[in-house]
Image (cartoon, rainbow, N blue to C red; front, side, top):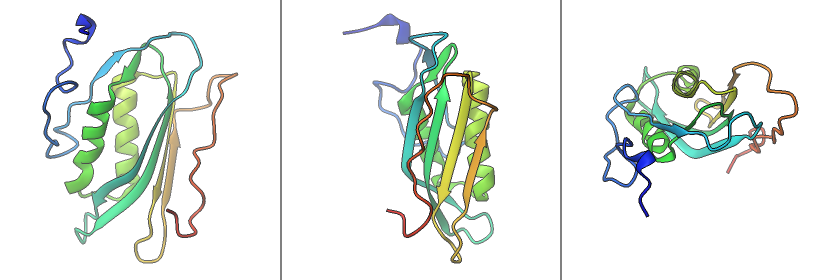
Length: 154
């Protein structure tokens, strides 16, 4: 089955390699199937990895992205490759989290978006970073992100 609406996609259905950096990653979008409805799209990345910009040591997080589309939805393979491109990217937890959120907002112009990045401890302290575009639309069902406070997450 071939749908020509998706011919412009560069990665889905094709062999793709992990981008060298988040800046080099190509995030793609497709038309949202239902405009004007308050439905939430959730992506969960329980094995997100980046590098500490000072020590070069790996940092790990459980990232949850929720958004209410307007005209666009993110193509999931491109999002997977984008998130994977952080594996060799050196930045603090807060910078990684906001970089992801801002890139998605720029690409999708969603009605609403929130991100929760639940970072595993380094130096004995877990760091959780949260951001959202503003108040969610009235009547939207927003489930809890489902990640418990740190008590040996897993």
